[in-house]
Image (cartoon, rainbow, N blue to C red; front, side):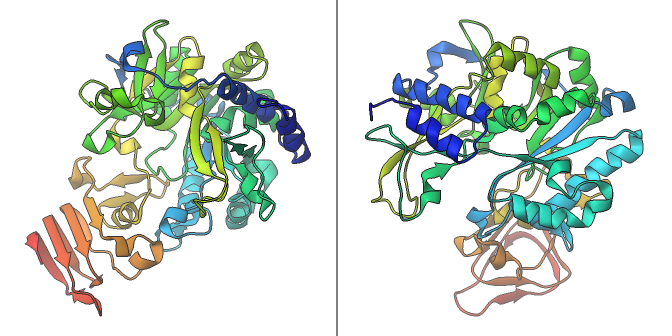
Length: 461
């Protein structure tokens, strides 16, 4: 094959039933790869984003007519493999018998009851998460949340690229390894290719709120919806202030040549600019991966681009078998959903409270979430306890607690007054343990140590 020939990819993707919109999007990125575009955004090409509008809870008001025109879309394509799960992360329990998915359904049902409007829910599943998700939701069949035709937006898959030849990667021993997810920027071709975009517009749905299913702070906020609708903007990104913990995460900026907002990920930053990238005083805002879309304007923009949003390509170098570093080197092309902010004239960003960004990426996050530091409402909202004043406890668990199974027997101490807790070694917190201030617990290797009921404050125990 000629290096850079797209035909083999097109044939392979069509044979696998990949949507035409996704083939077009992949072609756009593949051609950029062949032109040896790096996708890098140097510091000299941008300036910091400044002076953004700030949203405070309670602003904007509650408008049932707007809610009737809105769909909630949750990105639900990830497995919890980093925490030892072999199933979709959103079936993890926050409270006994209450998983992420239960809270998402509660949130939408609550909005329906409060507004009398048929607020829609879509879950963007992957081939890895579809069966688990729909199986779990079967208990909500009476509410219209249980079948693919009601709630599922299927994520595409794209071929891995042989790094040496730029041909489709091959793995005859396990052909499934020849494919990879295209990143959450696949939202746009998936909406078009599945028919959901036209279906929603035909039903009078004009606005979409999109967020990660593992970000339990990301709830459709009627006041934010009102702000977005009043702005007339085609696209709104929720951002919040970067902290030292966010130095490696993508940040918002403004491109100097056209003054459009853009999102720069660390993979798009030249090595020489990493210090500026990580300067949280200069680049103050990071993307929470919660966005608002005007679906009619999205359709118009897609038509303008021949069915493709020209999202910046992110190039990832891997091996075809990620467990075998000696297998064929490949390139995986991904796109980020938030990067679409640069594709729309008049796109905006808004600073939101940090409480709207509460992702569960580790067992430490889950341990904190399961504690009394967080309150779970009947409406599905997860919020920090009132006395915490918006500051979550910092949880540090050693590597022996990396997997979910390892924290199941750890216990759930009260963390309402806890600033930081560190746990090293096998430990069990008995019922009635209250932690305050900054505390740490160490246990020698061997049998677990039990921490008896009582209050532990500021110190090592």
